[in-house]
Image (cartoon, rainbow over all chains, first blue to last red; front, side, top):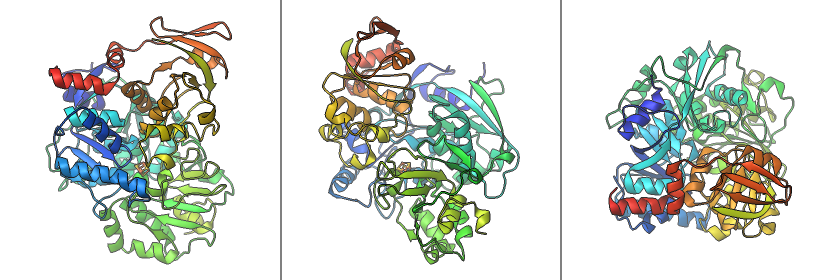
Length: 420
Length: 166
Ligand code: SF4
């Protein structure tokens, strides 16, 4: 019986020739990640164990990105726990303010993840790295503590759902629309405890930034991981970044899937997910006149260079609607610098947007753009749960960068064709 | 494992932002987290819940972020167990890892009403609704997870492994 790419990576890291869905395994991890919310708990647990040293100071990655630059004293204390632990352990991959980025934009960019890797992160969007053909999944702080100590983690081998996308995408439609449409189709628990494997000619044509966006939101369908086949684009991306060896795996032709879903991507229109679940995806044309107070362009979902390019192409020569606040957050310092170089930051500022240093900030209702009672935002982020971006009586609509830029200009949720 | 108590009910897809909103995540103090437990799902819950009571919810409980603060807040609020039709996977492993008893039973989730008194008998694999006189099946944990639970969570389990080298 053949295996899927997910099963092969798990088997290899557990030192087994073969694994089956449902099997519980103990596997070696190539990388373990924590941030300023989850790592302090993990460090506490690690210390309670009486452990002196992490299993490998090059493979434990700490990124203070959620409440940083520190939004208050408590957040500063949390970030300090990371900083001191990183120094004391001699971690080579601790990323300080000014050299950091949102973790899931940063790790691939810094060449820390490669094809065939097994990565755990105490952050649910760790699944982003599946775009590189790695098995990457979110865990909790206790799992991170155990992995920092032993270099291992327990897993239940998931079943896999195979998604095949066919056809050419319509103008402005990108990875965010594909994944919102997919979540709308299967629901927020449609892939619960399963691997989501994304294939097909639409995916082959999709940029790496588009693939990161899709893999990022696998968790929003309940997925354990999202994973893509490795191709020329993947190899070009890791070229010059990845400093380690990597392993190429691909699903066998006779691999077993829980389901195979074919999607005609040529029919997918620009998507918007209505409050308060990512599965409430609709075509932007269907949702009617929805006035907004704020637009957030950024996050580990859509804070990459291509996202900023798409938004700038629409915003150029236009002004942000007088009743809207547009907040632009490049995902990493490198993305910020590239956007500056390309003149995108100027476009944003001239349009009347606020441009921020890389941070999660408003995405989780942390800081840098919290919503008041009754306010409504259109965001390129990944979650629109109750209270996600601020007051429990505020609302978040999710979309890609094209709809975000058009909506910022129009003051209501709008399609790019209405602006350019 | 025998757990008995009064139930508080919630709907489907209760996410971790509802269980413990991110605005409180600038601390890891369990007592402080407990004060905001379930706040965006039911702002009165943290005040009403008594030690030993049980949360009952629909499908996909704990979906969303990986924050362990969610099961920590529930445990610190004194909740003895969570019963749901299904759990999101990171919440599931976090609960097991920190030793918060959780039980998956679509039948119990559908049958139990707010205020019902129930008794969970993990060994027998059943949940008895004392108020309604109904019994629901509950899936047993796989052996490895029983080992984790018996050890008191992941860290004591790892500690033993690190010490004994097995
Ligand atoms: S940008 Fe948002 S979703 Fe991504 S890691 Fe930060 S808080 Fe989480």
